[in-house]
Length: 254
Image (cartoon, rainbow, N blue to C red; front, side, top):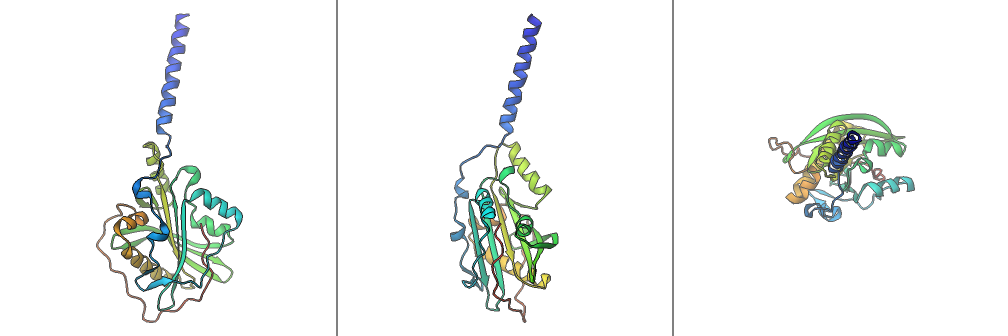
């Protein structure tokens, strides 16, 4: 009888300990920290460098099902199209989510575009050197009928920019083990062009101009608190013979 009682006590203690450990390692929702309280609309200038918002381009509205998904994932979104004096247009989309748990993680462009009928014809990892560090980015090309759209995007999980896939999962796991749920940011720029290489050059200059126009505390939101330090890189000047891109519908959101 005493032996059975002892076994029951031991099992009870073990179960309680397991429950305590599981609870400790389960990420807990938290209120936004002061540095996480910001407005994308106010943070990103309407004009910077030689870029201004192009009011002639109206963002596409996602279908109701897509919109429902986006509202669950993101706390803030921003969608604009900018144009420079050379007629080059860049579509900017930023999405911020305060809860990057498994069920509410960032909705990546590879998924978003395909869900809206695009074919993903190119997908590769790249690095974008800036004056503030080297950014790990994705380069995509999405196509829908005659529309060919080169895309550059990056994500931040917590306070660091990271690659999608394994690195993204490891970042979330590290936060999970510490009992926190990280926030996340997705920044995407795209253009309509048949020449992906030239389009990426325009996008890189746009990103450099945008980051240079932001206050340090705002820049941290977009690229993380400690991107890899590299030698300062000056942005390349615009091409002497740029080709103006036609007015087009904005890129899909998500």
